Image 1 (cartoon, helix red, strand yellow):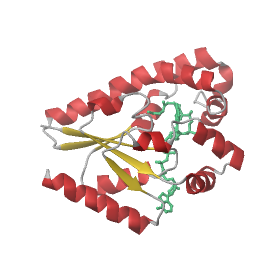
Image 2: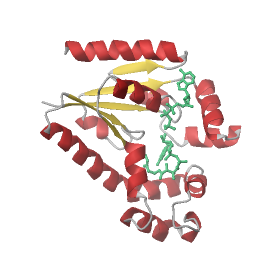
Image 3: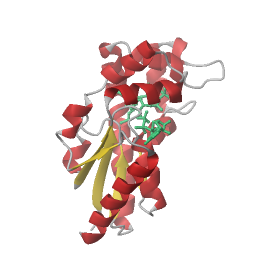
Image 4: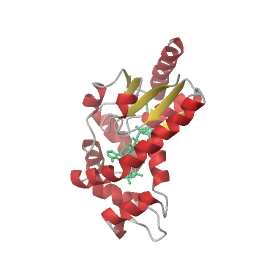
Length: 199
Ligand SMILES: CC(C)(COP(=O)(O)OP(=O)(O)OC[C@H]1O[C@@H](n2cnc3c(N)ncnc32)[C@H](O)[C@@H]1O)[C@@H](O)C(=O)NCCC(=O)NCCS
Ligand SMILES: Nc1ncnc2c1ncn2[C@@H]1O[C@H](COP(=O)(O)OP(=O)(O)OP(=O)(O)O)[C@@H](O)[C@H]1O
């Protein structure tokens, strides 16, 4: 039987870093941000739907999605973000569960879903274990500014556009605290892996 681990957190809380550690330990990962990028490739149905909803301004001269332009629109406006979610989420949902089915057919024991909107879009209801990677707001803001070269205001807009980490933690079976350094993070991931082996 395949069991599904839902891995989530806030923007720049360290989800992908944890997911890479789990992948190194041999666990297969279904990465929602990757799935989204595939669904938004040039000429895809997804990108066409986005162009229809948001206009030519979100498409680059070479026919790709202008991620920065769409980001500006949706991270500053709840209505626009909801519109984006209603277009993308049904496709993302189908693709993610199809990938999980492939792993089920292969009899893989554990599969990790790395999904930013795991709780908001209710993927957690079909997970056997939910892990939330949490970080204090000031550290989250700083890491986001550093990684994406954003101003304080831009970083804050992205953070407040998401469900708060406090709320996400309430849905977690395991909370990983990523306020420390990478070594501290790795130790917690090791403890999770040990727990999985015991189950
Ligand atoms: C808005 C877009 C173009 C911004 O692209 P960009 O390259 O700047 O960011 P990237 O895709 O790497 O996402 C970075 C992070 O932003 C946050 N984020 C992305 N989409 C959303 C959203 N709809 N709501 C809240 N947070 C989001 C997540 O924490 C994600 O990990 C892009 O994120 C997108 O198309 N998002 C919609 C698809 C979606 O629902 N993604 C979440 C998958 S569950
Ligand atoms: N413990 C840590 N110490 C220092 N830097 C860290 C630590 N954990 C993560 N980072 C850095 O913080 C940034 C955010 O981490 P990561 O990309 O893993 O977050 P994420 O939750 O996947 O973000 P997103 O939701 O935006 O995809 C990255 O630049 C990463 O290298």
